[in-house]
Length: 186
Length: 186
DNA sequence: ACCTGAACACCGTTCAAGT
DNA sequence: ACCTGAACACCGTTCAAGT
Image (cartoon, rainbow over all chains, first blue to last red; front, side, top):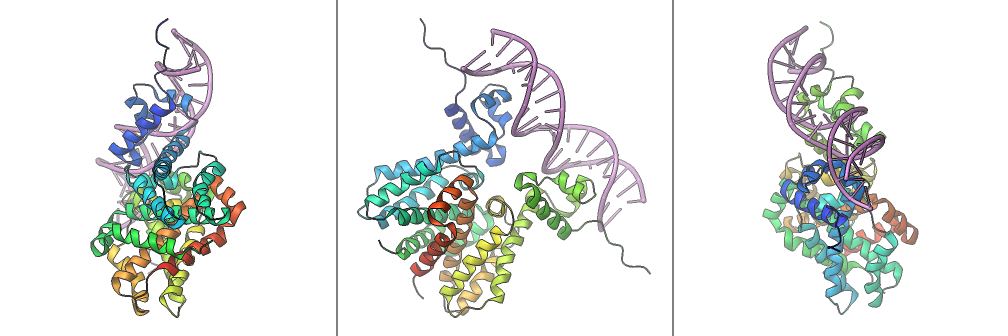
């Protein structure tokens, strides 16, 4: 008769709390116990919604990649090279959108279905004229470059040094542009 | 009168034990207490040789990068592009040489002096005709690509899927070649 | 200089039990 | 179905004390 009874927790609220936590305390600060405290619940309660901590980290990483994917569905590119440039940008923005985003993505296990995930990116590239092999290969290279760049950037002292010499931002642009320019056409 | 008394431990033996441990149990298995046990010593003893666990991980990462650097001093290249291709190869080999090598390098803090580290790589490129800016930029891009690739590869299910479709090895070659080909000349 | 013993403040995870 | 209480087997790190 009254509103449907809602559990105190669900997967989404758990992931959201984890993002709030990583923002405040960094990757090391994300513990199941602290998460539970933040959610007003006891630690074992989390294990009803998630198999273990690694799975939770995987869900966070997936959310970060999803951010980049969604940005790309809103964009539309005239050809596959500019699409890849946009994708590289979107990825870097997604990693940078959360504290320790790159470190998280580098250690989190994959929770999504690889085939779905890969095809989701390959599809727009194929629509722009690449065959599947090339689409997957270009996709993998751009992801690797963006992820590696973000990880390298997370290396504090090196980042400070290189940024003073070069500007990390424009050097990322140039590297990404070089990569995409270097791919062979269809 | 007898041989110089040697302490049970030093930094090098500690790092070596840590590599043995990561090989056996993976990154999660590297704990200060297990390391101490492996070295026949109590855990607090490690803190005489190393500030904290993060520093130890940093030393391990540095050893991995050093492996790639040393491989490059033995090689000699006719021009900066082939030098960069060789460096990319050497990095990937160095990450792959230890279990969880990429994950380790993605999360470990930097223990070396950034300036020394960067110049060490920039020098041979400058000897081959690049100015310092370009040398540092190309270097950063190749490291990012290799590190990101190795991290991406460490993502089990995705690796299995893509490897079946593409061959990760040759796709790495192609991506690296594209990147280096795309760099502008001096 | 280098290491031990004991302790502090945490972890992730399991499991019976509650509702 | 969803959560608590209590417990297990760990952690990293500090610090006085030993040699």
